[in-house]
Amino acid sequence: MDTKPLALVICGGTINEVPDATTGKLGMAKKAEDFLNFVPEIGEMGDFDTLVFENIDSSQSDPMVWTRLAIFLKDILKKYSGIVVTHGTDTMAESATAISLVFAKKLRIPIVFTGAQLPMVDHLTDGKRNLIGAFIVAKKAALEGVTEVMIYFDHQVFRANRTWKKSEKDFNTFSSGSFPLLAYVNASPAWKNNSEHWNKAVFHPASIRNVGDAQGEFGLQFGEGVFVTDLYPGTPPEFLTAGIKSGCCKGLILKAMGAGNIPYLNPRYDLRPVIKMAVSMSIPVLITLKFPDGMASSSAIYEAGQVALDAGAIPTGDMVHEAAYVKLLYAMGLGFRSPNEAKILMHTPMAGEITV
Image (cartoon, rainbow, N blue to C red):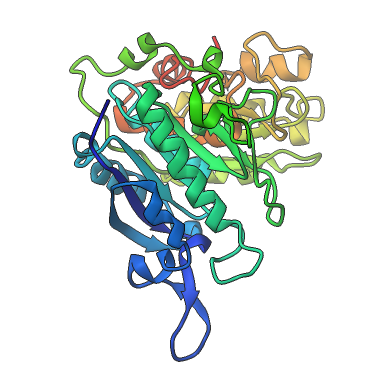
């Protein structure tokens, strides 16, 4: 049994908002105890240390923040049996996915992200139960050797890199669609007496953790300059062309129609030349879907999807859009010399984010 304490890492978000002593307006707690005082039960969770990373609204997160968070967590991994991260919901899926990719090869403890739709001061807050639940999950995972990066929200335990935010108002905020939950926390005695609550059939195998750079070191850097656009009837190709030619675009993600389809019949809106131009400039072009639970396959169902692949676009399989975006940035950080190398990296499972 690991006797090390847990760590609570504060990254801001609604869960960390408290009223200002003077104005009464909500703002980020200046000290961890300012919001932990609303959850006295947390003292019953056993030994834990509280560490403040960056107290920000998650809409202000970016790849540089992910790198700083990865370095912060890397420095404490060996000190704790598990880590709970409080984070805003807007970009929790992206941040947690980033951490799952960085630590995929060497993670030996559970990392559980959680947050809230309503601040602790609200009578209807979900923050209290989410924080307590995240601690319970982290403790159980540590005891049973579960070393995933997870999101815990509204009694559900998700694999972080299969998750997206589905609602701004529901307490059931996140989803992983048809990808199974890692666990569900309920009133069952299983949460006290045994490990049957873990859906171990969907845990990614240990061999996946060995995928990465030849030196076996943590890749802590993320790239930048990925342009994302939804495709709609009449999307002007020149908008995309201008971005590609700007010198700032290092990657392009097209949220395609249907099962990965792009406009091509009308020359005015044909996107094949855009894809070919990007590829010729060593800019990888990914095809993701507008809706979760789809499959941007390497064998397109429709001609409108196949023409995108023939032009050089990279299908993202069953990766959710958030994971595909973060993974492309991570692939940039690892370094690739051509869109084909980017394709290999994108199609290589790192932390269970894609099915092959």
